[in-house]
Image: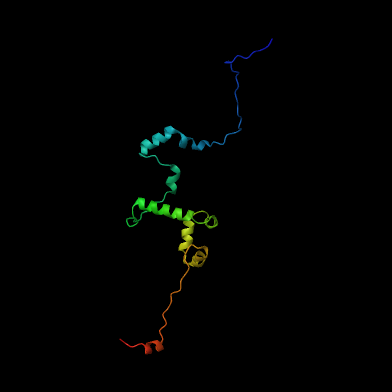
Length: 142
């Protein structure tokens, strides 16, 4: 007898994945349980990442002279844009980080290297006027 499959009759095909022993640490069960998280938030009044509290350091500084947030963000964007206009070899030398480039440029010991890379303009030696006694003897004193 021929077994004809009907169009809406699906065979039971199930996939079982055996991964071996799990790597879940049961010591973190309380940290991941939503009931404990909500209870702690109700008790303390805030939701705080438990890992960041130990590493958090408070910093107090006067930033009243630095301008507003928008102007600082625009300045940062301008720095990033200027950095991206540099050639790729120069950017890769500083690890594609504008911060490392600024640290390098602001170090006075790297001034010659910055001039060689084209990051700073060449030094122009000022022309000193030559005052000669012969010239002053010829000119009349007014």
